[in-house]
Length: 168
Image 1 (cartoon, rainbow, N blue to C red):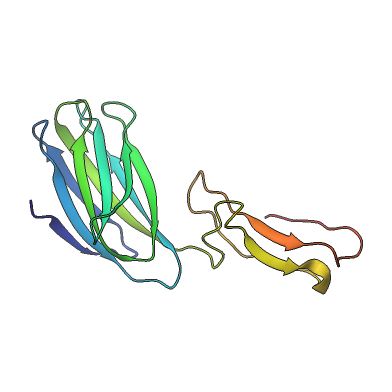
Image 2: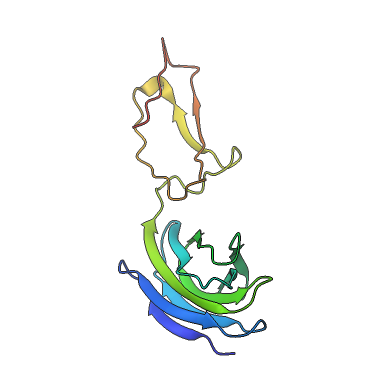
């Protein structure tokens, strides 16, 4: 099945309305994001879901590798997911999960580049800020996803007195 080409994802969101007419139907879409020097993110959301449809989607990269997938919690429920990448060509497969048919509105939004410290979502990936003995260290970072965490590592051995961390 050929994917419907949505073109280049820019700062302006791409929105379309589709529908699943029968249980075995899958809709396929193709889009591109600019290549980046660091991780960037895009948001894929499904809203205005038909009351009989429980939408499910999978995102693939240009090599056919699954990058992400999500299923709505119930029939008629909205579903949103943020996907990180270094840019490129992506495909979205839309279907249903244990439901019937219905319409949906899909919106793709470019969330821009992550901060320069990514990836740092685990203790093993913690960004090393170095030795605090040289004075203040200012980190300008961002949280893109609701459930995202950022880890940082630093050495306090040479730092005299108290140490404080401020987040605003």
